[in-house]
Length: 334
Image (cartoon, rainbow, N blue to C red; front, top):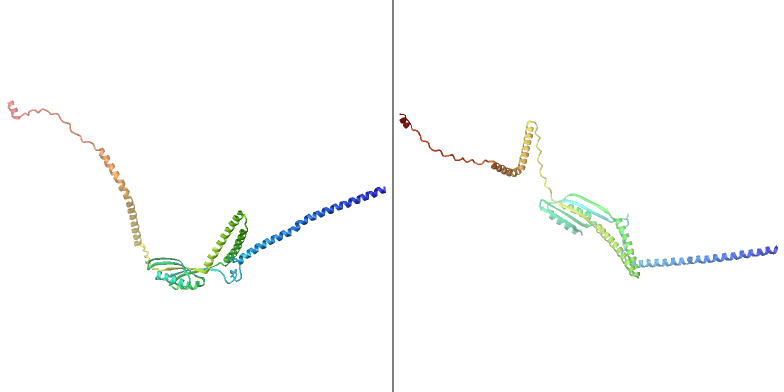
């Protein structure tokens, strides 16, 4: 019995030892298989970083070669919101009464030209020396806006003046930021186009490049328009001649009593007669047009009813009878 127990214990120990060895082998294989991707991940990350660094270097090189949108040393950056250097658009309107509209308009043009400005629009209506007007749209440098308004008001009798300002500093800053971003996007797309190998890739990148260049050109055009409005203010000058004031007739005194009633009745009678005559005058052409055919119809009907003339029948010729004479009768009686 002891021998069998010893053999059983030895067999159990061998089985436990073999099982432990098998488990350790499996764990080593799993560790080695899991460690392979862990070793490859840093290499892939390093490759991605290298590609990103190359793209950044390409973008930086494009900026260093003369990218107008990229900030460089010594360039003037647009003013941020809150700074004293702000982008402001000035607009003004002034109305002046003058004796000679044409001559004053020419003087206004000379005044604006002397201030390094120009005429945007000029409309003149010169019907007569006493009935004339002109509207001039003048563009002057923003620094000379106030002085030009004062000078135009002194050309004659100033009747009205108004001015307004629009702060577009934030719009300018936003446009500059969008232009820089869009320019960087265009540069990256051009770099990708240089790396394209197949025709499909070239067509796709070229289409995207055209779209981004169009958006960049639109933003640049908006910036130029804003810069023009900020640099040159707009003044609308309206010239007119003095209006003649005609004397107003004195109001008639209201008449009451008998004379007032008589006057009111006479006016009502005159109005009634005028109304009746107006109605008759309006109906007369229609009455004439209707009366002519009606008269013709009545005349034809009367003519048709007139009886034909009756002719007398010839009478029978009777034989003449002898006339008894008195002498003869007397002789016979005798």
